[in-house]
Length: 294
Image (cartoon, rainbow, N blue to C red; front, side):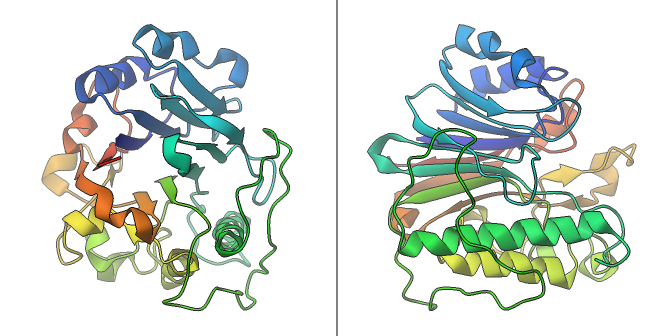
């Protein structure tokens, strides 16, 4: 099974390069973030024409939005409202009972201070809620509530202690894959300059701490770092502000694919499609691709 995730920065504006990617790389499942499309205008027929007949989405005009584009059957489609009504999450169940979650974590604005910047507080809240949600999966089975009606499982206070499962003994109730634009670059080599970005939103110590709390909730495996050493530079995003993004190479690894430990033996390959940054009308993010023997 080949899985890809891509913050496309408007699916309707960039439908041509999405279709180009699907026809060339043929993932079984593509998770999209920042689709920026109300559901009634989502280009579902374009995906159906090339064989992706199992597509689900949750979107809004001009902002946010997530989608799962699949050529294999999926079921139990759900969304969670982690902080407010933003369209930032959608999930489904894949064959073999694997649960699949697609996230678009808030970017957090420009100032890394919760008192001065409500967007940054929103981001930290969102990641805390993700942690609380998945901490419950060590004891609670998949819920079957319908799309847009599932309540949030578990409340976690910002600034308070997180109630995490004991480390080393976490046993998820089922295999789970989470993907998406987490908008946090956790490792020093996930950014072009660790020292210069310590005070820049996406790589601040508090964000990295929050993401590590999430990672501990189910002992998640960061798939790309299974194939590329944490000591090596690895990026999935390059700003539009850089005219020559290749020359400056001031990137960050904001896009992730994580799996629960039981799926680790099935890993076959992981890659980041850097050349997609040169596509016609490119997103500032590029696809992350993982293949599993499933």
